[in-house]
Length: 147
View 1 (tube, rainbow, N blue to C red):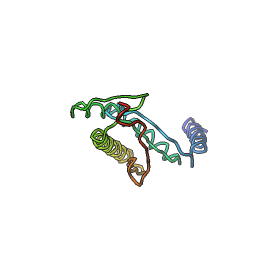
View 2: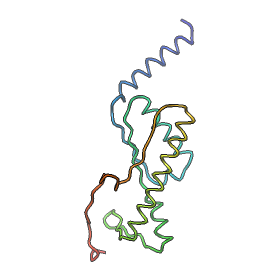
View 3: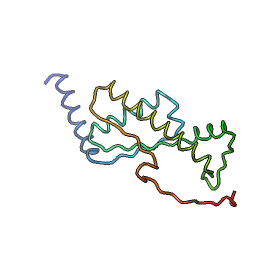
View 4: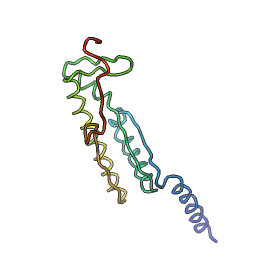
């Protein structure tokens, strides 16, 4: 065997190990909204997610958006109030939050598809929000009087 053949054999063996580890597994990647603003970081993260998908993993990306939400609330003149580590959200703030998270979601999916096209692979992504199909159902944690 020559060096190229040796390298190919090692690469194939290594790839097989990764396929065995990830194939059919669900991999959840959670990242904060501050990363979405960093284009190169997002593109790198999307490429990693694409590689995992190509290995046979079921990839779920979960993003935050606290930084963007706080900025948008400030622009609207709404104070961000945190109670016990949770954001206190009025209906007005909730409308801004939904809009902000939907925009982030679209940006993430668009970057994913741009990287898929650049890499010339056959994978796809969709964006879902918490309101889609009642994916997330929540109750009020604090009443207005708790502010």
